Length: 251
Image 1 (cartoon, rainbow, N blue to C red):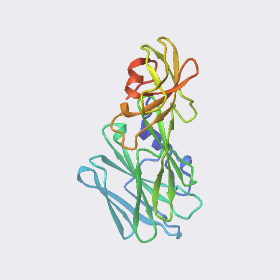
Image 2 (cartoon, rainbow, N blue to C red):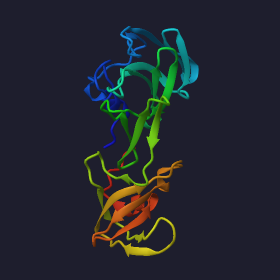
Image 3 (tube, rainbow, N blue to C red):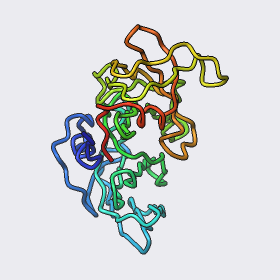
Image 4 (cartoon, helix red, strand yellow):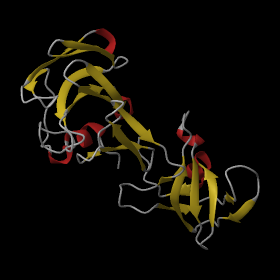
């Protein structure tokens, strides 16, 4: 079942001073007094929304302009991505018409300037160790991306993966489906060599996915599939979906 990114986000952001996983459904606000730079003095923070998703974030006497590309700007919450340093961060919530369009913008404050750290689709998991995990719904599974906080550069850095584990959540090992129309499993994502042909009525398990850096649509994804005979091979997303039953498709 598709998980609302807003619902996921609500369980991940935090009160100032607590790790991200400790948050209790904080509602976004448009103003607050909070110590962001660790000097022991509260900083005045305010967020104002303009037209077409534009917004202005102010911390003390510093200002940063942002754009959410037409999304509704809801407000901000305070997060602590790395409890080992003195700083805390701001997370600006913006909502699109559907979950896939939501964007959440992270900002830091060094005592002088407001620094944009980057934006993500959600803050699925952030335990205060400088690592952010972000889940994106891919039609029948959750793609989990890792980001690390580079404090020296004041940036949230994406850590690319050659393959993504396929599952409905972080603990799930693959997704099972039934073959309704036989299809080949390729030896590689390039070339035409076939390692196996799935049998109609047999069970297959989707184990991993190769996702292009610039994904045009979900049919561009290649899936690593285990056949009922224990053989592994690759199949394109559109062929997999059209040739099987039982995938937990949603969205």
